[in-house]
Length: 417
Image (cartoon, rainbow, N blue to C red; front, side, top):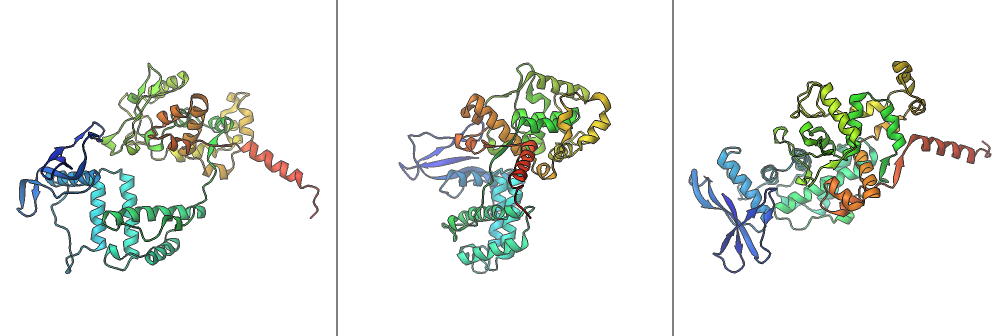
């Protein structure tokens, strides 16, 4: 079973499409295709058996890939062979179209997180929308849906609500386009506006404040996030075997046994160079935890699955009171660490600790010392423009924040009550 492209030179002239090891098509630039189809053997609903046949033609290669994945799933029994659900007028209702769209999303091998988000957001629209068909969606429907989201979908932070609404509209637009609605009823420039916060990275001093409060296992996680610039899923799905201990490099690959793969399938072409003492730290961790090369580095308490709570653990470290750390360690605190424990990290800073800021810190440091192209390569981005979005202009440090507040108090001290 494979995809064929119809050459523009003739209706009956079909050419097989080749794909590379990463699943990307290898197309001959000298050839032009007007349509795509799947040829092979799969379940025929009409004949009620596995039969050799040719699919209907589709316009794009992406549509052909969806079709191929669905037909393969039908053939191996992953999904049941069913015909589209039509109403009495012979049309498919929007709820059934959403079900079909989600099935296509799944067979296209989208990440589980993306599929779950599509499902949740589209089901919200279906529960709100009272008309039967997708092509009846109007601008007024979209505006009423935005009002409905504001009333029924609370966000953790009030300033992020517009971002959540825009994501709903983005997914809804993709769905409507897939069912033939060419133009989304509400122009993007009319969508709720989002004020983008200043991009921030951690100062070395702020990182040292957190490290001063951490034990060895906790330091492993903090330094791993800092030295690799990995996304949270990449951190938690790295095995010891992904570390080249001799060369001092770290990389990460897909882990199908955990139904996890690298975002956008953009695997880094080479490992990330890390300091020698960090390589030794990973060896020490491996020995301390009696782990093998096949083990994940960061696992849950049962040492089986990826540690989904790794970010919460880092925040808990930052929340420790300096006085409590000094008391628990007695005289084991070095003179360099004591000043870092004298000032506690405010809760407002702790809440904002996330992997993206570690990633920005890594990106900005690499770009400043080795160039933005190197940063792009190590972050696993396909375009420099994406990497530029990660470069942070603002450093986080509680000491600077404290000094600023003191300066403000002094600046206005002469003003009476």
